[in-house]
Length: 243
Image (cartoon, rainbow, N blue to C red; front, side, top):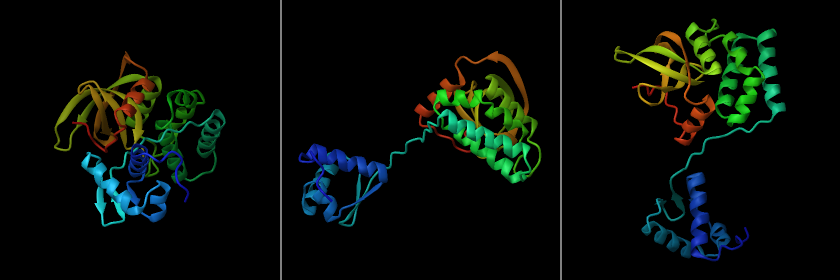
């Protein structure tokens, strides 16, 4: 392993080391790695101790391994029109052809996951290609037609209208909510939405949603704007955070 060009200063060495540590969560202090930074291994260890004293979050495990925080980054898929067209065509063929019920479910799950990771302009393209028009016609994991709640939420997120629901918590209590459905998650069993009552993003289990009704009221912002705000907030998607 050759030395990194420009790695001759402590600040640059620290930046390289910290970037690797945050990306992979651990760095092994091999002789080759130390040489790549232009140091002997014992000098690299001394530098690491100094960086720790300066407040850099890292934990030494033995003499050869350093463990630090992993900074998770949300995957964004910038698929082009050809790839998205192929995706929608494959889903349409799965629906119309002689495919198994399980294949229909898996195709729907793939579409939801990819849709949630597209940048706004690509998501608009997916909608224009009619991808989400196929979703209400798929079956659930038990091979039954999707529920009216599922269909209503898919229609609401596609047409960008609000939905009034009664949400039943795990303790049996119920609350009235007005939500803006953004995307289905957890294999279609939950919906990520903007909750007007909490003025924040929440995830609701479809099985706990009662009496959903469409609300003829436009959203304050576009669906893409809400998804962007959710991603900027960290893209958290717990199974149920609907308090």
